[in-house]
Amino acid sequence: MSRFIEHQKKISRYKLIIMDFSPYTSTKSEIPVPTLWSGVSYEQKETDIYRLTVKKNGFLYMAMEPLAKTYEIVKGYVKLSQYSDGGKETIVSLLKPGDMFGNFDPTDPYAYEHAQAMSKVELKVFESSTLKQAIRHDPAFVLQMLSALQKRNYQLQRHIAAIAFKDVAERIQGFLLFLAKEFGKIHEHTAFVDNFLTHHDISLVNQTSRQSVSTILSRMKAKEVIYYDRHQIIIHLDKLKSTVQEHREYYAF
Image (tube, rainbow, N blue to C red; front, side):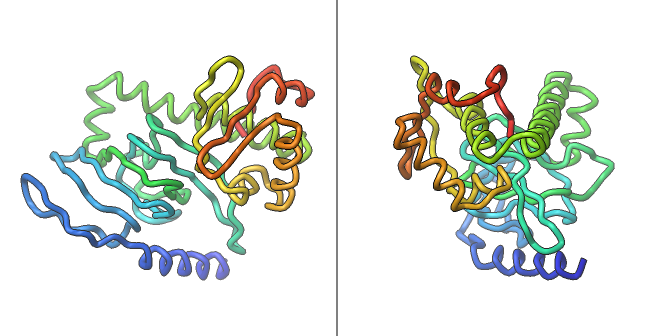
């Protein structure tokens, strides 16, 4: 447990390094940048719903910190991670515009994962008081929230199944199919995905080494199954599916 506490201290020091204290101007009043979040700069606040931006690699919150907010991604990508007592990270969910995350339970004031921006992110924030009102009076919002929870649950189930039953190559192939379905723009059996992931990120999703990821992706690139550079991943779906033994459904890592 002491290792975990020490790791949390290291992350807190990192958060302070990337904190954004740029000036904020509002049509209503000045709103100070909170020291709890890293890389955050406020743009607008209207009662208990407002927008904020987070720099790449900025943490929104960490596990076991007080959290009384729910977030909806407007632009950019966010990862949710867990850490072992020894400080080893595993990515449990990747989120895109339209996805919701944060605290969905107004009776529980704590976070149970780390939330970090993988690119510059724009978010819509719902304070706890607003969430309670929406649950009582807005069925559409409740359905959106339940959909977000169901999606998270499905991703975790597929993640566990892939690690338990698939080898590394099959996990990465399935993960690429997941990227194509959830994050790609598909045109004539080819998916175009913004490359917001490093090889290290992919290794954390698939519980393997960065070197193994690099080797497998390089082989697939040489066979023209995929192409990638710093900005984009291009996935030829027919070629990729032909290399996957069981491809009747997409893996949600």
